[in-house]
Image (cartoon, rainbow, N blue to C red; front, side, top):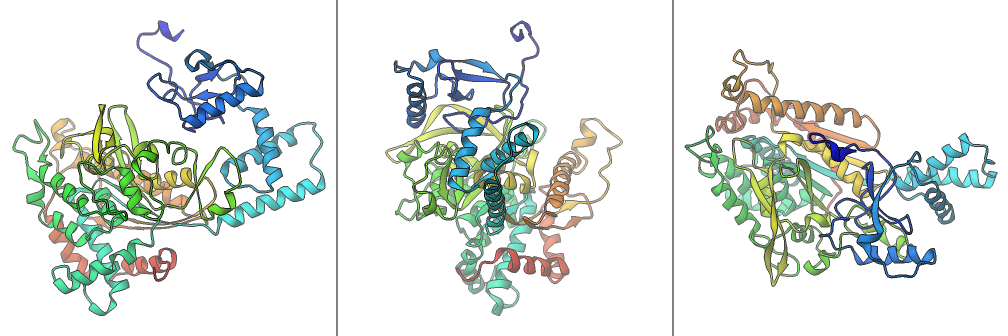
Length: 550
């Protein structure tokens, strides 16, 4: 029927428990590809594409499904996979019954999926005429549910989230620098980054601060700072990018009317220079031309490195079915469709993919992102519309130590268009990777927000919105900030989220590239750092982030 339509094409989504047997993603389309022989092997649109080579484990699993029903002929994948769609039953009741039996046998609820199976079964039992559970089974279920929730409150995940904001990125650097100095260098008094002795000592203790975090999250300028902290690059040096704004952000005289306002060459060169300082535990020196997100994952997790060749076969272990755990040993002899991996340190960076009109949360522990270069990701998250040109990204593979790009590219822009404050995407990504109850200890640092009325200008056309001291951009940033802050603030009222948002209101409109912001902030920071907000920040850090000497 849809083939007769010329303007509209169906794209509805619905929640259900059908996963792609290749990449593990939970599919939400109305229709998908399913094997017509076994009727149990499902593929998402991406994995069903003729250009995609299926994982060997998926092929073995599909073959076994056929053997289970006595079908031993050779599988011709593209012939047996046909389009199917949801019937009146949204859930596979047979599979749920099998899963429930498995959960009862192992006597443990291990993740959200197990909990949904248990809850669904209990609901079905309550709505049907089936005999209720025996008393022994009821006691077992009660004990399992209590244990699941109790264990969840023993898992603490520490998150550092940094907002975007252009030149205002100077603010979180100053705040973090003061926090580090006050906590780890109490004898020097007021930290001065221009003092060579202070700076050298600061470099030595910066890692004591960063070692406390499991996740580093950032958007735009916050993405660059989060990356530098994650790889323990001296943030005093990063601060000079903002102090020397006119050098790194070279004005393009054709912009912003015809071209982007700034030529990104110098800031891109600085990003490349920062990456070139990184050396992995195995001695591999990174460069902007060849360093991928897999390399950054290996830097963050030096005791569990994955080489480039193995990275190509890790779609399952570090894909949609990944589940982080603290005690990997207890799962060694267990077989299931979840790939459990010992807790890792992770870098998350937000950018918007204009090629497919989709948000992207670049994740160093997600195998599908390992084929991107980290330099491209950092340049993409900072590609703010009108300020910098969109950035072109290629996936690729490492051959003989060199990055070889694939044929097709994607165009990305600044992640601030959807998550200038990346707290919510952090909570989402973490839950997807842990798949169970955890405690979120979230420290989020803003770049200031304009608090006065953002009423529409008298000239409501292009000129009124664009030339009025960044009114259009400020309005968009304030909208996403308010959205994130209201939701996250209310979520944090639950006992499993301990959150602090450290930020300041700005009393006058300032564009994201207003160099006067630095002097204005420094002048008032002398007083603000002695205020209640900063004292509360120190208390929050000590109580919920600091894990002792490390």
